Image (cartoon, rainbow, N blue to C red; front, side, top):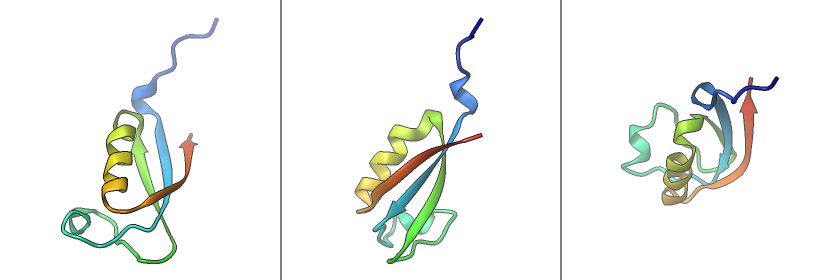
Length: 68
């Protein structure tokens, strides 16, 4: 019998391009490059919030993959 998936511990990796360095991105724990892709680990519970933050910074989400 299949149970409910435990979404609280699921982690996703966003591949993002086009992020721009600004005051908000200076607070990140990872560097932002003008070219290439950045990979950001996001817990399931913060996926929507992270998508909005990436959009505000001018980024484009290229892919989202589940980890584990």
